[in-house]
Length: 632
Image (cartoon, rainbow, N blue to C red; front, side, top):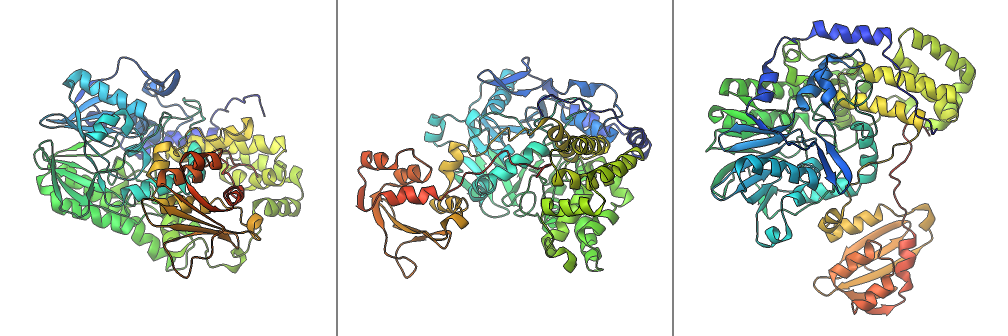
């Protein structure tokens, strides 16, 4: 599949459905447009942000959104993307600025007595550096006197190396984060990082061309930058709600919100500015309870409660609320209404899903029936541009009841390829299925076409007719989606069916991430990579005596790689004992090309057979960042 196939136009049914959206929602309401432009200072004169010669962000990539919405895009999503693509430096209130449109997220800058506090330094060091340069071009060469991560997702800390130099870190510039930040930041990006990154290529449409038949945004922001990712560990942890800290003359009062949009997250009130930072707990869309790239299911019940708590703690004193995505909301009454509607949205999805599952509805049935109250749907910020009502309902079901819907027919189903082969045979063969599916496509039933033709593709991935029809159906579903990530998933699926896999554009497993892993996390990350069946008969034990810490014993037995600190009944007789420093141990475990030479240079003491290390490492598999998604 080497020759690129051009996307198809919108079919009449999709074009008509998109046109109908214009009459369904209040497009005459221009408040968001006014808020998104309020406080604009300037944008960067150079639109291309580069890592060397490679472009990692293009400020002009979404210029096409200035035109009228075409029939290949849901008008509501077009509106949201146009707002999110607006880029530049904006004044939120006196002394607080945001750089928006330079990455998926916003970077917020709070002016202090000597320099600036930077909140959430984007994904890539290159975009963060460009954002800070834009600020300094208009507000002066103020040093970075503190950095704050609101939560443990990469678009809120990955660009920190674009702000802090090694001498800044050595000088003790504080890095502030909620309790548990480091554990969750590194575990999410290492344990399941390869699978998440591959699926994120679909979610953000990284391989899609920008344009009316391609990627127009992701709802929460436009897309993810593709520069270098880093991580500087926090030095000041926020551990309780109500904790107050003053840095560079900037007083902050914190609200911890664990289990909401991230496992470790916080909101920040700035009393001196009457300003409330809502991190990613209240943005101008319905967020994900289970992101399509994959993550732990979030808790909408506690999310709703924390929004109530934010209103109670800070609402009466807040003149402006801003977040690390989208644009601020000004005015106390508007802020409270905004936060209250966000609160009600998550509470409604939680409560109504539980009501339906307790009536016996499955996740698919509940998702199909779930409808947001009209009063909430009239508010633009409740729309499912990033999360969706449909997949969030399924997420609530999953949180409480898991993957099984209770029907024993679904308890032990065949895996996709085996099931597809049987389905196609039952339905009279691929030619018959495709004939009927083409008829369904002509009738506009793209959802059914995608479901049924998927069986043909999985039964025979080389069937060109099936791939073309499946791509066409996915494309039409994408054109009609209000949700940016659904559109990107559908269109990326169509792209890969036609032209081959786009792979994973960005990997989060940078040297900073690996260095930030605790030793326990590092040992666990190796255990995840063990080829279980290939190591059933292996029995290997290595004892690592750390010069600057306690001993750790690794054992590969029964296909499981365990590690035990210290001594005790779980520690057996080692095949080899190695005494060394922690840095050298990390280098060995992370795959040094010649462990024996490294240990010799490090002056490690070895008692036993050193070849056991190589034997252990030979049982580890490498993750596949380009695994198939729309084909078997």
